[in-house]
Length: 178
Image (cartoon, rainbow, N blue to C red; front, side):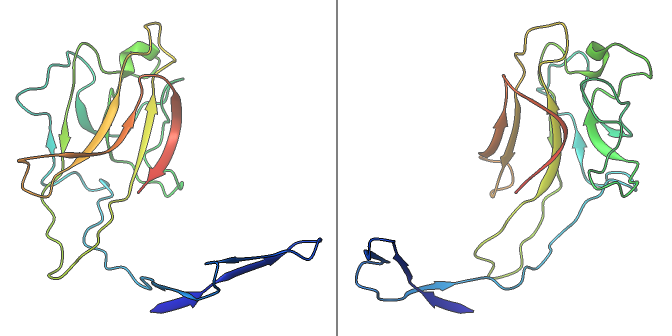
């Protein structure tokens, strides 16, 4: 659909402001529907996902599939909406009653890679949406970790960063990014 509009504002001193200045309507094409290519809930496992790659160096907290063990640093549920989903991709599954440090990534990096998703023919714009939880200032060590999300459109030959968290900051609960 195509929408046309312009903005006009009158202040209490009888001044008028119009955007654009000449009052010519601006046309925008707006997507009125989206085609869902894939939705992964992880509730029935993680088919096609790769948990760790050969260059990973973390000694603890590698990516895994499971239900998180809640702590001061991470939520104890997989789904932010309370839907009861009991499986997710998570680092540091930890042990019940374990220290906060038993739930984190130590001494390196760990990688989670999705399967390839094919966009419909002719798709010009696409969006990735995911939920993530990140905490970096609750353990006894200094907050020096980062969390990055990269995408590839050429089968992993090159990557573009879409989000980086850390090393400072906190996000204990699930948050959506798209």
